[in-house]
Length: 366
Image (tube, one colour):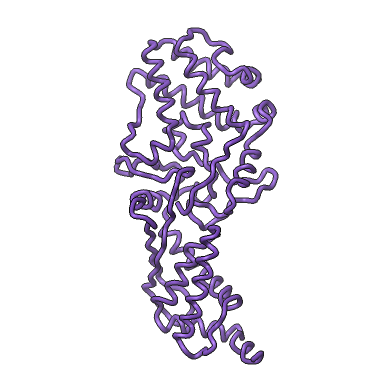
C-alpha cells in the first residue's frame, strides 16, 4: 500500500456487528430460537423479514444439535476470523477452520451472513433503526482520510462525498471464505472499483498465496511506510513517447518488503503502472511543458535534463504532502527521463515543445 487509512471511530452502523457477535455468544447456552438471541434493537429488523428470520432459525436449530463444546468452538471461529489485523500482518497467527462435524453449520452460516451484508446492512430498515446508513459511513470515511487517491494503487480516486455516491466496499478477507467478517467494518474497506475487480483483488485470498502458503499483507488501517517505483524503457525512440515500459516497485523500508511483494501480486501494481505510463505519458509531458520551468538553452540536452529534475522534485514534494492520483508513477517517469532516458527521448520532448510553439512563444516573449 502507498499509505495507511484512518479508521472511522464513531459510527452508529457499527452496532450491526453486534448482531452476529451477540447471536453466537448467546446460543452457547440457549436451546430455543427467539429474540433473546439478538440485541433488542434488531428484533424489529428481523421481524420485518420473514425469510431472513427463517434462515437465522435454520442456523440456530442446526447449532442446537451440537454440544456446548462445539458451540464454543463455533464462537471461537467467529472471533478468530474477525482478528483481521492479526491475520493480515502475522502469518504465525493460526487460522481456525470448520471441523468435519461442523460443516453443516458452515453452510447455513455462510447463507445468513450473505443476507446480513447484501440485504440487511445496506437496507433502509437498519439505516432508520440505527440513524446511519452505509453512505453516512462513507462520508465519515472520506472526511477522516484527506487523500482522494486510492491507497491500494494510487492510480484512481475515491468518489467525492456526494449523496448516493461512494466507492465499493471490499471484503479485505474475502466474504466467500471468511464470511464471519462480512459485516465487520474492520474488514470492509472502501476501494476503487479497478482495484476491487478482476484481474486485481476481486475474490483473491490475500493471506494465502496461490500455492496455499500464508503470507504477510498490509492491514489498511495499520501502518505502511509506502513504496518507491523505478522505470526503464526497453524501446526508447525519438518518435512519439510510446515505449516498452518496465516498472519495479520496492518497499521504502526493508521490514515491509514481504508485504509490498504481496500487495504488488494482489493488485498487479507493476503491470498497471507500466500501462498507465503508456496511457498518460503524453499528457504528463504536456503538463510539464506548460507548467514547468523550461531550459534557457533549448538546444542543450543537459539543460533539458536539469529542467526535468526540477519538475520531478516538484512532483515528489506534492506527493509527499498528500498522495495524489498517478503521483508515484508520474514522479518515477520524470525521474527516468532526467536520469536514464536516451538523448533521442529528450530530443523528442524538445520536438514536442516546438510543435506546441512553446519554444517560439518563449523566444517571442524574450
